[in-house]
Image (cartoon, rainbow, N blue to C red; front, side):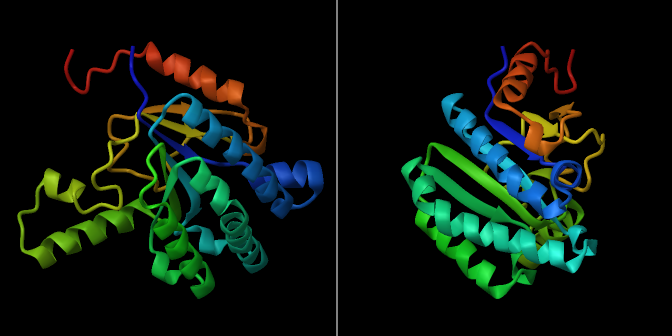
Length: 225
């Protein structure tokens, strides 16, 4: 039986759900927050220690400007309204990505949220924001060169945004698309991947539990037999 320490999720399908049911992509992004709440609570219940959520990729800047503005405002409001509950639930927040390219107001809120939750320990949530795995790897190699240390697998691990964390055991991508979309390419080398047809706002606790149960029965060899 495989213990689950770390789950990573590509929360795909918010926009499509919004168009289908509300005639608004932004309504889908708002609805997706409810699913985030459900999965966070279930991770705590199942004693999963790490959760990494792909929130905004470095390629998402190609989207319409009004949608990008809405997404950042949605995150700002989430951090303002939910931070006390996050603290009560003993959740640590960590944002990963090129954060210096985000709006200044959001950057400040991110720093405050990380500082307020830095000592929390029940669940560690990584929020991948303006994140791209290829850029992460390039930045890791730059750090290694700057430190004048050997370029090795271990040193790359230790200079990623996710340093000191275990690699994901499970990756879930909702929305029916079967690709990684430049997400945690290094860290997912031996991760079990589950592609779900349901759009993210439709994804339920039962769907999550089913994946956890299926994972427990997988024989993980990590290259051996």
